[in-house]
Image 1: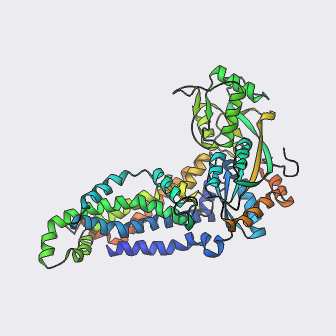
Image 2 (image 1 turned 90 degrees about the vertical axis):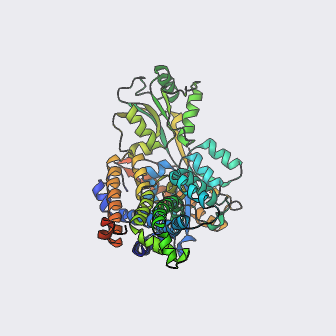
Amino acid sequence: MSGEATWLEVVAGVEMWQIIALSLAVSLGATAFATVVGLPLGAALAMGRFRGRRLLILGANALLGLPPVVVGLALYLLLSRSGPLGAAGLLFTPTAMVLAQAVLALPIITALAHRAAAELWRAYGDALMDLGATRLRALPVVLAMGRAHMLTAVLAGFGRTISEVGAIIIVGGNIAGYTRTMTTAIALETSRGNLTLALGLGLVLIGISILVSSVAFALAGADEIGEGRWR
Amino acid sequence: MRRIVRGLALAVLLLLPAVARPGGAAETAQAIVLASTTSVQDSGLLKNLLPQFTAATGITVHVVAQGTGQALDTARRGDADLVLVHDPEAEAKFMAEGYGTSRRQIAWNDFIVVGPAADPAHVRGQHDAVAAFVAIAKAAAPFVSRGDRSGTNALELRLWKAAKITPPKVAGGWYRDIGGGMGAALNAAAAMDAYTLSDRGTWLSFGNKRDLVICVEGASELLNRYDVIELDPKRHPPDKFAAAKALADWFVSAKGQEAIGAYRLGGEQLFHPSAAAPK
């Protein structure tokens, strides 16, 4: 991005699309990972009776405020070539960014999924068990019944990742054409004094975030969710 | 529920090529990490040079732009394959510790003291940076320090030392340590009507100057030298050494030097090639 280009020129450029695609890929990748682990985990924490359950619930809720810059730093030290996972060569790659953001999104999705599942389990748990379901068989049913809240959990996780800059700038390195995302590009343009461009990129980012949420609602069946039929 | 997961999976699959492309297996062997100072990136120099190098050699260069102190630390940890920095003292220490095998100057330009047009310390037009620092301290005029162990920050601290002044680090005082990059320091100086030390490359490409103007330039102590340092293959992944050396050699080659000298921003030359006659 040249300092002299107007922000419209930049926004319409090829580089811009690459940055948008990477932002979405990293954030959605991290959200997908945190969803696949977090939703079942959250539901299991609501329905299960196992050791360490309370500790995990407390942990998920306590980590809602996990500072991205600390996650970035910890992951940096792990992935550094002189660190324990250095041999994998993951530092300054998009994979490292996905990992960092997955760590940030996981507690959010887990805690919100747990909250929704706990309520449903209180209301319908006995009935489901009377019908002869095991807890394992009942888990997907609970997730499906609570899909409106589960969607909110996933979108909250996505919101955390798409807006995040502290962790990915450390483990990604903000490399042009490789690990530069919308948020790190905004940080860079601000530091270059291109404030109008930085703000323009910010508006594009907000637009993308709204778009993704809308698509998610459409995919999940907006009318059902709007009416909260699961109740 | 299943639709959420399916939607996410679909989106990830669609976007995967965008992520996977630059890091594909074929390319990783030919991709190196260059830890550089921020000025060579923010000024647009590397963006101009590296495509020429990549076209000639097929080697992709991933630039991680940091302050000089941080860039050298990145290299110490083994996370960079080549270093391009501008702090002679920190570089000498790095070499003495045995991390680098060769250190070559590729270009120079100069540092400048910028400040508000109103110039409360009356330093505008001077050609003596130390005297200017004394005047700024005497006037207790706001001064923004990088405070980030960058090459610019290191020079600033050396200038205060030469001026025999210990800047007071008190809340609300005139000396303001912002702990940020050059751009952040210029943004802060512009907002606070403060003086600050900047490299010329970042200054020329900086877009938020507001009332800031160049106050002091042309002093011998404001020379800014950029060195490329090759890293010891015994301490670093040896498979990257050849590619990193190729880039270092290219910087000092006739082609690289010509490209550095040819880079202009707003009609001004930002970097003067100096591999043949180091300053």
